[in-house]
Length: 207
Image (cartoon, rainbow, N blue to C red; front, side):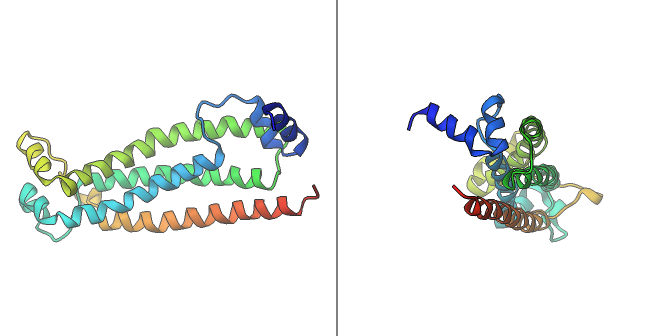
């Protein structure tokens, strides 16, 4: 089947979002489902922070000294990751709302065009305030886990990747990773329910 045939089938299918996508220029080369999955994947990646830091607890203790003597591991990267998780989660919820409207075909073509523009803006916000922040925290937590000598070398150069947070900002990495597990499961469940309902509705539409 040619590309022109695919376009014709899309226009005749009656799905407003699919029609709108043909006439709307996207900045990101991924669709709405891909945007949602990117957000979910970002949140899921922060699950690794607790295992990565607690596995190297002795290393962190030797580098930070008395800062970790309380028995918790609460480097600044933990609260930073949590901020990224919260931002990304909020964006994911908004995108899931749009995905629901798309899956049940509740939008007109004009509304669908507006949704595409908004979802692009949401992803931009998610990347700048969530994805990059969370990814940076995960990478820093993995430095000591994968290459302890590199972490020690960074400290020798004055770069404290495990600098401990204080006061209300002292969030143990187990808390951050635990919340990430719960949020990931919740978002993934919503995604599966929404896409499943969309598939069910399409299956009942006469061809």
